[in-house]
Length: 273
Image (cartoon, rainbow, N blue to C red; front, side):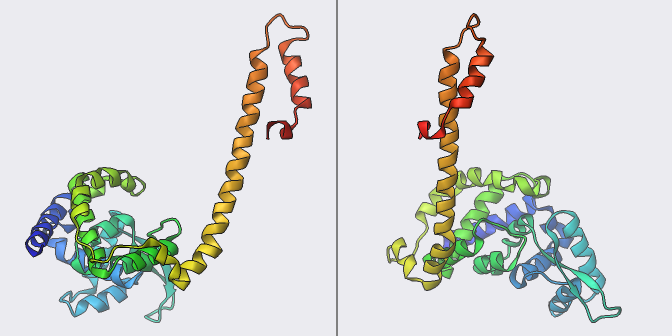
């Protein structure tokens, strides 16, 4: 498995330089450090990023500002919040968080892959339906080694499938998920999990998950049921009106339009229940 992991990491590094322009050439190291820092810390001011990276060899504040501006322009970062700063004139400055494009690029960092669920949790621009619940469940099902292993495989499949990352619009990134899974499904099936078989019913033993299901998931199911019932009733009505229209003829007296108007006046919704 160690040899296989080493090959996978080598392939990811090669693919990242082919598919992610921000991680190619002389700017690769600084860009990856910035993405990694924001990924693991959550939204930060430019100056906060600089303070954290100064100890890693980035001496000039201007280097960080240029890199962040470039990453924002290319879609890897965006403003996630604003904060009043104590430096110089007190004013609100932008705090930068990962976009989904930035998230994909940040996964090239092993540190990010090892902490991937926390990265999604800390970056508010990474929006998924019922995010809190999804992360709770994933943390309960998989241990950290399993999460990292799955992140490795998914990143490899995604990079192998996509064209240049910067050419894909943010809202179109999801389109490449299915082709990527087609590429990586055999690897996922072979991925070694813990010896213990996953019993998903035990998720409800987690008090937070149980409460979330009761407070958020079950009410939504009831809402969907009501919505679908109303939708089905609407189509039943359309079908009934359609059956009536099938019996109309141009020579009818009264005219077809008049007959239909009369029919619609008298139709009762309970008749189609």
